[in-house]
Image (tube, rainbow, N blue to C red; front, top):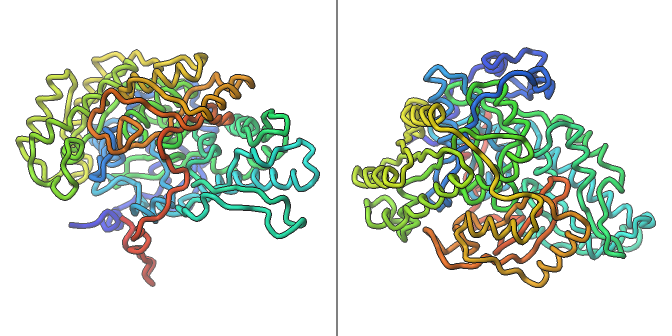
Length: 556
């Protein structure tokens, strides 16, 4: 069996100029990054502002498992399938982060015959967006420490600096560090730490900004620290948001690439729905809606995380209204939720499937609470038995949700035609009355309780004394009337990763509450969620190499 990178390397890519032409972009609308990648000018949105938006499809999934679900693969395959049907479909995906690429897996560009290409470029430096975010973030960090060193006119309390440095690589040794050592010339000694770039507020701002001006304004609104009187200090008080915007001038423009079947794909911003909002940028999604009749996008991890944030945060700020949501599940993953170990997932086991399918049932229920039509996609594996497929189809019929087999990994767009037909039928015949599940004006506690009870199925929410103090502080400064971004394990509906399936009767424990004021949400941390992951015992990087010919191996 060919690896993903081998399949991608055999692809017959069209010059990106040709892909741009398919969606009516001229040479003046794009900026080339080599032969197969380009950026799209933000002027395209202005030129098309009176054009009717296409239909919006969101792809999400059950709670992820080590067995994998294939959300990106289904998103790409579904886009290819719609193009096979003669539709003008545009895909909008998230950008991979170098940390996981070299750490836990070798890529995030779909898989098999449903990939975006050039896959190796996309998984590496791409067009440099991640580096721009890293530089803008760390310029602000440098400005904070420099301000303190140069006299500290803002009276920043160095014990209460909330804005951390970032880098786009997993490195646990940088989670907690001390900076400013070495005497007076090197500033004031303080505790600090790094996050991974994609967990940063700058990434969230890039994803939620609607223009370059909006991006700069949001960066100015970041709460970077508190002063000695306990009042918030904003990035704009350090007067570097203009310079940060300058570093982001190209990064703010969405990137255009293609799939293996030459379907246009816009890739821009944002992974990590367990610690951030976890979907691609508003600008990319709006671009796809203007340039295509159908826009297909995805949100990270399960519907309890990525989809909830897409619907409650991104749609709210972007004025987006999804026409249909596809929930991806694999029979292997559902068996895992039913208690089967990773080693035994290839063995047919309808009994375990019946136990684990409650996770799918809950995620379907979750989407319905937003009044959006739902379709289930079973991402096919060769190990799936006929009995298992029959069971899952009957179950979906019983709960009143349409279901399709998706075989896009093996067959590309051809393997997604059944899913495309069903999704099209649903969009044509079922009305989307989308609405967020809470008002941003409500209290933090009420918003969190709503998410915990309605989406996770929790009994209630428990707060640590520190978290309650933080909530009261945000209320005092009027920083509480914002959507909620839950930081939670992706593996369970609860905050305990070992509680698989559909747990009941549990409480969510909130450890910390902090504001990402520039992004425009309140981050609520539950359980142990890492903002700087580490590398595994054998990192994916160990299996990668580049040959003298320039051919890349081991990036899968």
